[in-house]
Length: 318
Image (cartoon, rainbow, N blue to C red):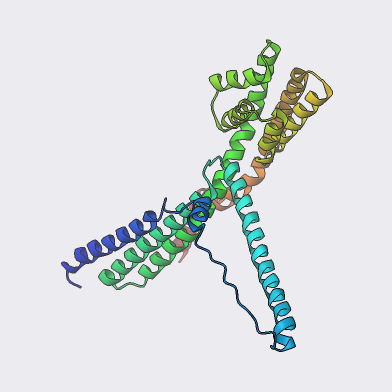
């Protein structure tokens, strides 16, 4: 293949990829609201009346309409099942986005996922094609395949890793936040004012979640309901326990400061136990690297001089 054709092929495929991107992103924002569609269709539907001859057969007049209704009900049931399944999937995806700290809608996430997949597949196929035409190597097919797999699996892996990272950050910040909240409430501040004061002193995923709770309370939502939504949107057991304790304290009339103090102490003890547990696992985890990398080097340093002496001795005797 000539050196002149390679830049031409690269430019052509780049323009093609750009066209694909423009087509995908051009659909964004063009979806009409369902209510607007209904308003536009008002008056367009007409009712057609058909007159049946009374001399038709009993099957056409009685049995056939019943069969048609049964078929329609089965079809409606299938559509309802699909709609229910889609609704459940949307709710699960929305909850996963909430756990990841991504405040975007399900439709936007699916759009960006589709756009990322299409762009990565197109680019990887283009790179694989160019490598194949320039080097005639079968490794270009591997490049295209790996790129396609990344395009398909990448968004899901990113979301899962984001969920794990976000929940881990919340867990690591929980003890310090509860300590500061306990100090604020002991000094005379209310629960809502404590959230604002904490947000002025700290930042992080947990602070963002608490400020979301504060905004919901300011908009008129019940505090217990806002805290329950916070617990439902998290996988951190300690946070669920904290929310449950605060709600029960409010219902039983127990001072929240006592609950916060005990929760903070329990969290510090749990964190200390986790650190000890991780530290106890370090020697076991270091066994395999020691055997694979360090032990051979030690044996080589010890046995190499002996091996050279044995070889020299054998040469002299021979």
